[in-house]
Amino acid sequence: MAASSLLRSSPFFLPPHQPNPNPRTVNNAPKFLTIKATISSDKPLETPPAIKHRRPADQSIRDEAHRLGSEHHKFSAKYVPFNADPSCTESYSLDEIVYRSRSGGLLDVQHDIEALKEFDGNYWKSLFDSRIGKTTWPYGSGVWSKKEWVLPEIDSDDIVSAFEGNSNMFWAERFGKQHLGMNDLWVKHCGISHTGSFKDLGMTVLVSQVNRLRKMNRPVVGVGCASTGDTSAALSAYCASAGIPSIVFLPANKISMAQLVQPIANGAFVLSLDTDFDGCMQLVREVTSELPIYLANSLNSLRLEGQKTAAIEILQQFDWEVPDWVIVPGGNLGNIYAFYKGFHM
Image 1 (tube, rainbow, N blue to C red):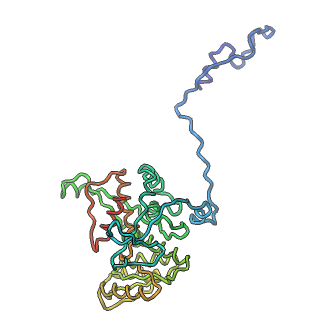
Image 2 (cartoon, rainbow, N blue to C red; image 1 turned 90 degrees about the horizontal axis):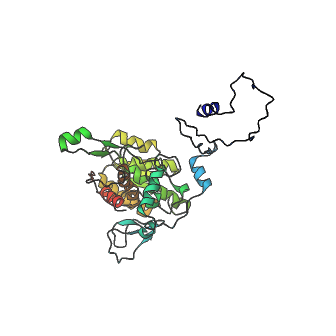
Image 3 (cartoon, one colour; image 1 turned 45 degrees about the vertical axis):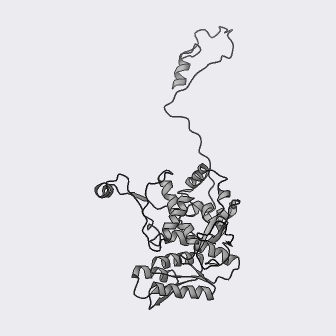
C-alpha cells in the first residue's frame, strides 16, 4: 500500500479509465527516472527457514548417527586407585576387566583434564546446552549429552541408552518458605526415570561399556549384581535393551513386588537367596571372580560416571550457577562422590 500511494502522487500516474488528454503530444522527458521509495510494513522480513532433510523411514537415529560418522577427538579416561597419592603410576584401561587396585582398594575413573581444558568453559556449556531436548543419538540422553566427560572413547554404536536423565527440578516454594525460611528450595527428582530410580544414570554407562567389551571379544558372557530392588531393575532393563544376559541375586522376602517384577519381566536370571544384601554381595563377588560375569555393583566405578551428570544438570538448570547447598540422601555414599565429581569437573 505504501508503494502504491507513492506512485499515485507521482507526475506520470494516470488514474484508471482516464485517457491521455493530448495523445499526440511528444514527451521529451527521459524515458527512465530513478525513484527512491521505502516500503514500510508491520511485519519484519522473514528469512526462509533452512530445509531440514528427514532421515529415511527405515533408518533409526542410531543408523543416522552411524551414517554421519562419529566425532574424532583426543579425550581419554582410565582407572586409577581411589584417593591415590599423586605420585602413584598405577592405572588401567577402561577396556580391562578389573575392579580393585593392586592393594585391594577401590578404583576410580580419571579423565585427561588437561585435554579437556584445551576448550574453555563457555565451549562446554554451549555444547552441552545445544544437546538438550534433541533426538540426535546419543546426545539426547542427559548422561550422553556429556559424553566427552563420561566415557569419551566409546563409539556411539556401542552405547545402550533409553535417553535417561534430563529430570525436572521442582520449585518447592511453599515448603521452603513455611518450614525452612527459604525462597529458593528446589528438588531434583532423579526418580523420574523408566525404571524408577537414579540408578539408570549409572547403568547406561556400565552396560554400554560391557557392550563395547563384548564386541571386542572380551570374556564377558553376562552381567551380575546383588540388589534390594533398584539396581536389579536398572541392570536388567539395559541388558535387555542390548541383548546381554543378566543375573540378579536378591535377598528373599526383602524387596517389594514392584521391584521384583522388573528384572523378571526384563528376562534376567533371578536368584532369591535366604540371606541379606551383604550375603548376596559376597556371593556375586565370588561368581564374578570365577566366571565371565561382569560385576555391576557400586564396586564398579563406571556407574559413578553416569550418576555425576545429575550434578552437571543441576548447574545447567540454574543457568550454570552453583547452588549454595546440595542435599543428597546417602546409603553407601556413592552418589555423594558422584556429585562431587560432577561439580569438580
